[in-house]
Length: 437
Image (cartoon, rainbow, N blue to C red):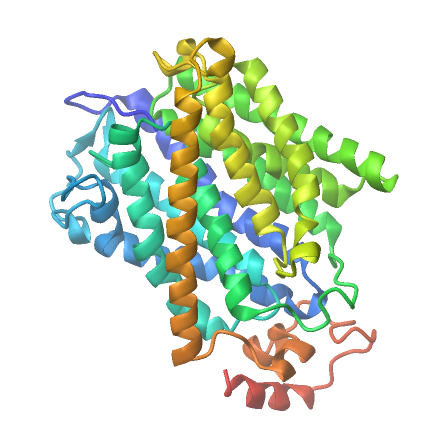
C-alpha cells in the first residue's frame, strides 16, 4: 500500500479514495450474497447476518483502538502501533495522511478490516453459534487483523520495513489471515452433520453470481484505491485487477471442463474471485502480463485446492481455505517471480533478473503470517468453545439456523427441504431452541 509525503490533502486523490472506500464497503454486502447463495435454504439469513453484523462490530473496535494499533506510531520492533489515536483522538478534519484526510484513510482501512472478518464466516457456515460469532469478531480483529496490518502497512512494520516483503493491497492481512483463520475454526468446530454424506449444494446460484459481480466491482476500489491517489499507478492496478479476475475465471473453467466435463456458474464465480484474491497482493508489483499469469495460476490451483477438504477431512463450508488462503499464497509468492522495477520502483522478481531473494522474503512473510494467524485464531476459537460453546446444537443445525436462531426464514416454501410452508407452530419451538444458544 503506497504512502505519500505531503502537507495538505489533494482534492483529486481525496475524491478517488472516497469512491474507493464506498466500493470496498459494498464488497461486504456482496460477500453476504455470495455466501448466502452458496448455503442451503435453511441457513441463508444466518449467513447474511454474519457478514452484516461484522460491519458493526469491526467498526466499533476499529474506531476504539484498531486504527491506532495498526497505523499508529510503532510501539517497538515493528510488531504493533501505540494507542495515541485510540478513539480517533487527535485526528480532526484537517489532519492529513499523505495527500488525503487522515479520517478518510482510516475509514478506507476500516473497510478492509470489515470484509476480512466477514470472509472467515464462510468456513464455518451452517454450524456456528451466532452469539459466539458476536464475541469472536472483536477479539479476532484486535488480536489477528490489527497486528498483521501493522506488520505489513503500519509505520515501521517489520514485514515491510525489516523483511522487505511486498504486499500492495492485502494478500497477507486479508487473504491469508482469513483463510488461515477459517482453517483453524473448521478444526475447532468440526464438520457439519452429513459432511461427505449428504448433498450440500448451493441453493441459489443467481445469488452467488450477483454476489461475485458485486465483489468484482468493489475490488477495483480495494486494489486501485490502495494507490491512495488518482494517478497512473492506480490505473495500472485497476487494469491488473480486471485482467487477473478474467484469467482466474477462465483457469477455473478450464480445469472444470477437463476434470468434470462441465463448466459451471459456481466455477465461474469462484474462479473470478480466486484470480482477484491472488492479484490483491501483487497488483502493484507486476505488469499486465504478470497479472494475467497470476490470475490464471490462481484459478487453476484453487479449483483443485477446494477439493482438499474431502481428502484431509476439514469441513471448509464455502471454500475460504481453498480460495482465499491458497489464492493469497499464490499471489504473494508470485511477486517474487513477476515483480517489475517499473511497478515497484526498484524490486525485481526472479523472471526479471532479481534472483531468489525476493521470493524468499515473500515465502517468509507467508509462513509467519499463516502460522501466527492459525495459532491465535485456534486459541480464540477453543477458548470461546470452552466458555460459551462455539457450535450450534444438533437440533439447531438440523432444523436450520435461520428459524432456530433468528426466528425468520428466507423463503415461504421449502425451508425445511420438503417444499411445504412453515407452520406458525414451528416458530415457538424455534424460539425455545434459540434460548439454548
